[in-house]
Each structure stands twice: as C-alpha cells, then as structure tokens.
Length: 488
Image (cartoon, rainbow, N blue to C red; front, side, top):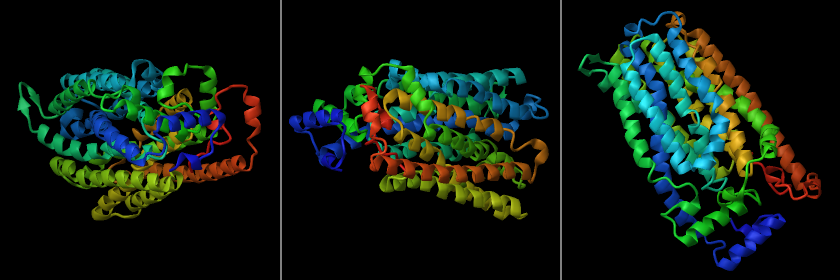
C-alpha cells in the first residue's frame, strides 16, 4: 500500500517526510525482504515456545489415562481441581507481565518464562501426592501466565496491523498441533519403565527437559525490537520503524516504544475501550470449548470405548486438522483484512460439532464431531486477540488491553476444567451443552462488535470525532485519533 494513499496526522507527516528524505519510502521489495527476515528469525522460536507451552500444560490429560490418577490416589473431582488451579496465577499476572516485557525486552523475557515453566514441568514427573500436584500446577500457571499476551504484544512490535494475523496464526497453530504431537509423544513415553518411574512420569520428564533446552537457545536469538535485530541492516531497521509508524497513523510504533513511558492514562484508555471489554468477554467464551477440548479430548475418545493407546492416537487427526485451519484462517483473515466475520464463521462450524455430539448415539458421528469442533474453535482464539491488538494503540494501551483480554479470557478455564466430570461419562451431555451455549453467546457478541466497529468507523469518516484533535492538548490519542480506523 502506498503511504501517500493514507491519511496522516501532523506527526505522521513529519515521519513521512523524514522517510522520503532517506529514500526509503514505498519500497515494496525492501518491505518484503524485511518481512521475510523477521519471519525466518522470529516465528520458528515463537512457534516452538508456544507448542511446548501447550504440551506442558495439557500433558496432564495424557498422563491421566496412563495412570497418574490411580497412582496419586485422586478421588472425586480432585483431577479437575488440579486443572483449575493452573489458571489462578496464570490469570493474575497477565497485565503486569506485559508491562515487564518492555523493561526486560521481549527477546529475553519470553525465553526466560519458558525456561521457568520447563523446570517446573520436569519436576512434575517426580510428584507422589495430590498436594505436590496442586503446587506444581500453581507454579506452572505462574510461569506460563505472561506468554500468550506477551507474544501478541511482541509480534505487534515487528509487524504491521494487517500482517500480524498470519504471524499470530503461525505461532498459535502450535496449540492444536501440540495435541497431535503430544498424543504421539505421550504414547511412546508412557511405555518407559526405568529407575522406579513407570509410564506417566516420563511424559513430564522428557517434555519438560525439551522446553528447557529450546528456551535456553531462543534466549540468544530473539531480538527485542527491529532496531536491535542484528539480522537487519541499519537501512532495514529504519525502514521497519517508519513503516510501523505510518501503519499506526501516528500511534506509537515498536521503535518509539523506547521513548514512551508508562502512564495510568494509557491504562484507562485500554480498560475503558468498548472493544477491550466486549472482546475480553468474548475471548472467555471462546476459550471454554478450546480448553475443554485440549484437556478432555483423550477422555472423551476413551469414553467411546477405545483403549488407552488407541485413544491417544485418535486425538492426533482432529488436532492436526485444527492446526491446518488456524493457518488457513489466519492467512485468509490478513488477505481480506477482517477478523470478526472469520470468528463468526468458525463459531458456526464448532457449533455443528457439538450438535453432533449431543444429537447422535453413534461413535463414528461423535468422533467426526470432534473434527468440526477443532476446525471451528481453534482459529477463533488468535483471531480475536489479533482483532483487539489491531484496534488498540499506542504501546502501553495495547499492552494493557492485551493483558486484560488474556486475563479475562482465561477465566473461561475455570468453566472448562469442570465441563467434563467423571460421573457424567460416557456421554458427557452436560459438558457438550455448556460448550455449545458458550459458542452461541460468543456468536452474538461477535456480531454486535462488528456492527459497533462499522458504526464508529463511519462516525470518524464523517468527521464526528474531529473534536478530539482540538481537545487533545498534546495528548497521544492513539486509537482515539479521528484518522485511526478500527479493523472489522
């Protein structure tokens, strides 16, 4: 897109002239080259870290059907409680973690988080009591808590608003892939009997150790901002910084983050934004089926009458389909520059899957329904977080908003961990019904949000928000700038 086709505020015009003077403006080939370099040097590490994060939080489901529940003498809903406590600290640290990311630098902060939870995950292989399981799950949640919002914020510091969705899709598709890969890995690891540890402990030992190694290496390769990326030339660093400034219509870009200071005004702007509030509630509803699917798919398939090893292997195909659908959904979303309609479509597909679970008594139909759930639900998570990221600026406003959406959204885990109770099997009608209801409400919120954004963009196009320029008094307007357009 030619920046001369955009509308700029006064600050943008200065940046624009500076870029013209440097000879960097509108160089599509250079932009493509920089994007390719960022993709090659950043995305593989984020993909691996998120893959291991999901494996390390969800492998308890694999360990369950390989004997963890019996060996630790878990009774009643104790297993569900162990799932739930993970999200207590996970949720509480989301917003402050995003603030810390700027101070430490995302290139170091994200690998350090992975190193910490890898150590905790490895230790889970040695637990021998319910209390130890609860303690480890609490620590695991504390270490993983800042990752999701941190990665989204980190990517927004390198990519333009309508390039970031596909990159979010690339890293997030590791979540469903973790179900496929984790199922295969758990099948092999559960066969190990060595040194008094039989089966399930090796799932934690090996998967946690892999996380530690990957995190230690990633620490030395991930940059903090385009300006600190050694794989970019000085010209490319300057071009990337100015491209981000132009893309955000004067809102703070990655390079200007170093000059921006924390303020409670930015926090208020993030928390009082309609998009932040609605999308945070919507994210909570979306995560109910995603988390319940990730945690209980082995249990649901086992209830269809399959043995442990068969159940583990049958979790692979629907999760792999979800992996492909996340990538496809992200690619299409960036191409059409829309998020909301893609989310609405995904919710309808997932709803079909739960209807199949509830309406049929045939195992083949029920298993087929898991494919619809996986294909429809998983793409919605990166889509809605990218949607909010696109619609918030500058940095601390976005950091706070992303922290809030992840914090509130993950409260859906408290619902998800109790959707499939042991006594409700093998049909699990209550769990399927709860997930279908969450999807229905999410669809309503999504459509409402789409209509609100169209209404607000229309108001800005017709000059109804121009009064903000006169009242700003030097204040950074960010997403409130009359020339800033929300992404639908």
